[in-house]
Length: 198
Image (cartoon, rainbow, N blue to C red; front, side, top):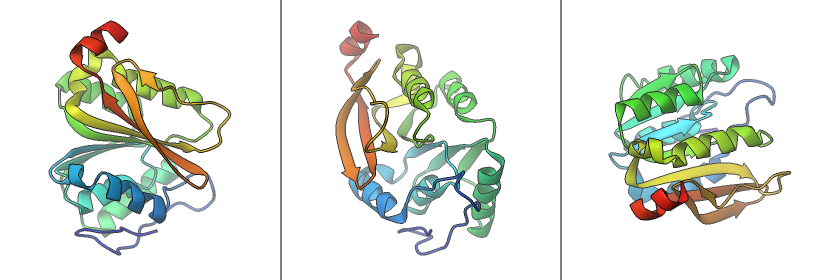
C-alpha cells in the first residue's frame, strides 16, 4: 500500500496484520482521486472510519488544506499514527480517536464547513452508513458541509442492504463500481429541497 500521487508519491504505508482493517486499495484510491482531483487543492477533507488513514493521507499529499481523521480501533489507530510519523506530517490534520460521531458533532458545533467527506465503514455495518449519512444530511447540521461539498461512501457492490438515494439534504448523484467495491457520491440539494425533504 502506498501514496499514489503528490508530495508523498510512492511512499509506503503500514497497515495492521490480519483482516480486521480493510484499507482502500491503491487502485480504488487512484480512481477516486482521479474523479475528485479538482476538489482536493486547499480542501477541508474528512476521512471517516479512517483505518490506516490511506485516503486522508492521499488527500494531504495532493494538497488538501486540512484533513480530519476519525478512527477508534486500536490496531488501525496505531498504523495511522505510524504513517503520519513516517511521512513526517506535523500539521494540517486532526485525529479524533473516539470515532466518527464525536468528530462530526465537534465540526458541526464549530460550524467548520468541509468540502469532501469520505466514509468507509465495515461493509456489513448498515447502521454505520445510515447514522453517518443521516447526520451529514440532517438540515440541523447543514453548516457542516460547504454548499458544493461532496460526500462519498465506499461500500460493497453486492451487499445485503442498499444505500438510499437520499439522506435528508443529501442526494446520490453517481455510483462508480470497481469489482467488488462501489463508491456512492452524494451532493446537497438546494435549500428549499432540503427544507421540504427533512
